[in-house]
Amino acid sequence: MTSLLTEVHSVPGGKIFRITMNRPDVHNCVNGEMAKRFTDAWLKFRDDPGLTVCVLHGAGEKSFCSGADLAALGELANIYASEEEVREYVASGVGPLGGSRIVQYKPVITVSHGYTYAGGLELFCLGHIRIAEKQAVFSVACRRWGVPLVDGGTVYLPRLLGMANALPLIITGQRIRADRAREIGLVWELVTKGKGLDRAMSIASQVCQQPRDALFADMKSVIDGYSLPFGAALTLEAENLHPVMRSESTKEGVQRFNTGERFWVR
View 1 (cartoon, rainbow, N blue to C red):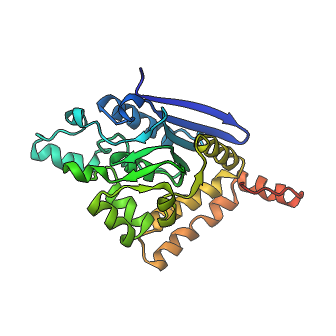
View 2 (cartoon, one colour):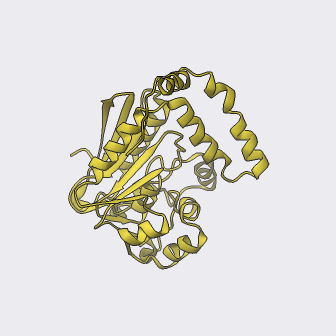
């Protein structure tokens, strides 16, 4: 059984790149083979201009992802690495779970329908839009076993939730349910059981219908400008004006508006 599946869905205006974590018998935990496939998948999405939106979800009835396969840690990280190998990893490694350090400037939607633990929570945080079914559960569960957050958790959680909500999760490893995750900003939208993937694909399809040059430019401005001083961030944003307004997708979008077309993502 292939541990990670990818599929391209062509829809009006673009293509959706769907990634399915496919080890449901072990709660979709990530081993070495799956991590390698993840790296390939994230690179493909980043580098293929024909792909517009990514949807990441887990197979089976119980789990989004329970994190690293603790029975296969040696496949994910070389704990006996030399000092030189450690420096090389810190400088240019892609993350133990595969590609988690690859910054995406195109929309990623993650959708959880169950256990979202440890590294699985880190993968969930890679979503720019995060959807959860009401039975989903979230936890920095690796706290129990002394395994650190090394696939973006200490970066994404404080930025998404603020320190006041991120630190209790990181310190305690406490489990929270989807409604609480929605309250603190970890989840953007709650849906009923069995409807998460459909909702993610619906949003992705609607996003594909929107002009992409402005969208991608805005996302890059937000991501790269987040930690800059206000003045520098505004300068970065200003760089978008002329290239985007001269783009064909923006010209077409303005023309659609002028002809009376109206469109809202639902």
